[in-house]
Length: 470
Ligand SMILES: Cc1cc2nc3c(=O)[nH]c(=O)nc-3n(C[C@H](O)[C@H](O)[C@H](O)COP(=O)(O)OP(=O)(O)OC[C@H]3O[C@@H](n4cnc5c(N)ncnc54)[C@H](O)[C@@H]3O)c2cc1C
Ligand SMILES: NC(=O)c1ccc[n+]([C@@H]2O[C@H](COP(=O)([O-])OP(=O)(O)OC[C@H]3O[C@@H](n4cnc5c(N)ncnc54)[C@H](O)[C@@H]3O)[C@@H](O)[C@H]2O)c1
Image (tube, rainbow, N blue to C red; front, side, top):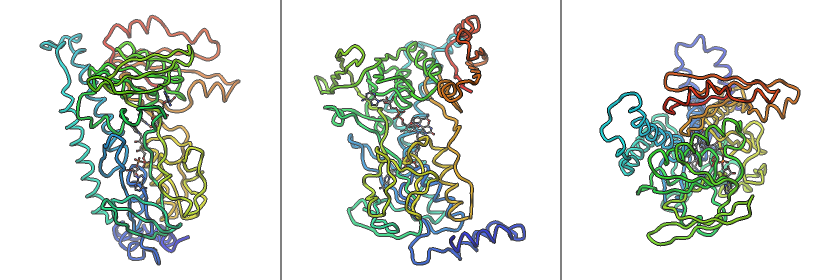
């Protein structure tokens, strides 16, 4: 128990008698307990989880430093402070998704009576889109930096590694080293795209790290991987007029309710996205005019295929950035086979070292999850908090052309986990101003069918909409 958290506990008791919260925070600051260390808390990684934890800790009176450093992608793309979500994740993805929806709406507006001159000739200006997306990101980077400065959080633009369990060495941009010590250390380094081990992947392919700032229009694109990222990117590219093909190794959106996943992919297929099922890439080579020839294997037919694309986007999952941390020096040993940190309550096997966000094994890789876990951890470290992050029943959305939001168990998990239970599945498909509901109950299987009348009437209107899985 730190002096600081004892102080905060006592203060919580007397808080009603103190005039303002500000007085309390200032009092806590003066009593900050970093003692022999430079900081009460050092956070390695300035993304969703790390920044949330740092800000909460400083609000609770701790002296905090945040290290953030972006190693360029194999294609040379780099970005600023704020982590994956802000720079190469949720934010640019959502903006491109919105751009794609707007484009489709222009065409669909005609069905609603809008007279759109030459609607067939409408096309996207890719450089204008990426420039605006990047400008928005830069403004968020700037606000984040100013916020850290205002909150007196020290921001170190350096690549962190452990020297021992309380000491971090930061390698700065110019190659110089900066050493700092902290009572508590939070690992919030997130992850980066994983590339399949095939010829040409690293040399010629891009990933989600590159697509949102790609200097030229992507053209005909092959997306390798049918998880969240693969489907979302294929969805917005196709809707912008860039033909997209997806290589699916097993099933799209594995782990999600498969009926809903099929709805999402059927909708994408109707809009023109091609799916190559049970296929893995074998090689990528550069051919004439800079195009990329891709060979892939259909594992079911044991047959090889090839085609030529302008862009190949790899979306085969992400790995955690723990290798470069020199965790051995700190004594952190709780690592899974794929290098993620195994921690029940964000606490590693070393008492003063914690982890939050995508770096954690078996936790949803989502921004709100990283933020909530980071904040709760700070409260436990500096305010005697006792609440832990609840990773169950986290709601999530897949931003494919047919948006899919879900919370709770998929039908497959529910029926596997509660064999004797009666599982009722309610599916809503909302159109602009119409929604069609069908209900089915498991068992019996016959009730699994859609109500064709309701489904049919829904299909007559333009295909705007989203599906919910409750
Ligand atoms: C394309 C895409 C779309 C996404 N869309 C969504 C979405 O719609 N909704 C959603 O909830 N989530 C989405 N996510 C996931 C979300 O971005 C992550 O879950 C979230 O960013 C994780 O936060 P984090 O703090 O764990 O790590 P990150 O945000 O990845 O931050 C880690 C930071 O640490 C830095 N770093 C790493 N190692 C070091 C080191 N040694 N020293 C210093 N700094 C280091 C990294 O460069 C990075 O800046 C998306 C992800 C991607 C890739
Ligand atoms: N809307 C959102 O909230 C959102 C959006 C994007 C990403 N994210 C987060 O980011 C995480 C990572 O997303 P992701 O899509 O990179 O990972 P993922 O694990 O969801 O999907 C990777 C896909 O690639 C496939 N794959 C792997 N190796 C392959 C190979 N050699 N050939 C063909 N396919 C292969 C896998 O079978 C899987 O379908 C997600 O778990 C999610 O939590 C969230």
